[in-house]
Length: 328
Image (cartoon, rainbow, N blue to C red; front, side, top):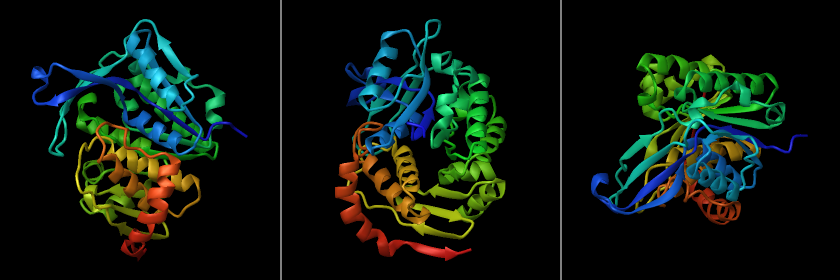
């Protein structure tokens, strides 16, 4: 048996977060953290007790060391993070908002070490993981990273491992919108569980209704689809049933970044623990709601103890009547 529960891969950047609200040009103090949707999910799953291997590439610089050190402190296995002496670690600047609105983010990642990820980084040990989580970000970074994404997803699915996929669209990284749609849908067809946001699903499929978006991916080979509806919760559909799960009320939204990653953490963790897809969506909604109540991309992701004390004993009972299941 593999010692790896979950394999995740992608780019983790250093992130400089403004300590005061306002235009980034006027901010004089920043706090250094890390950022990356793929690694947010990896960290969240590690906090829930899963053994997570992280496949990536960083520069031979202080930011690269900071990234790896931070991920290792979160329990990730970083033995397969390559150090690139020729290309730098990417970073970003993130504004601070105090009214719950989306912060502005400026990226400095073009030509980064992670954009030079390739299939050469894949080793047999990694393919023994129980599950692979993939997003649409690595394939947007470069052609070689895109080829690696396809190879990883194909190999894991062919080996009988489960595969989840979050489109996580980044239009600015693609040559064209049509290329993005085509390549993302090719990747989604390799996944068992597809987790788009509603606006993403509409752009990728051309359908407006969540049920039609989900049906599109089921027809492409997915076993189940969960569509994020923001504060309204989520819609899910499998080949056996479908339904809406209402969102978890949040009194104050602090930072919306990372909510979708929290949703993925909830879905993947629950499904790997053999919960039903409907119950997995309930957990996903709760972790997503928790994420928006903390400042930072992954700071609100719970530990296993927090999940059991806050969700399993309280939130689950409160949400039980809100599940509206629909026979398909």
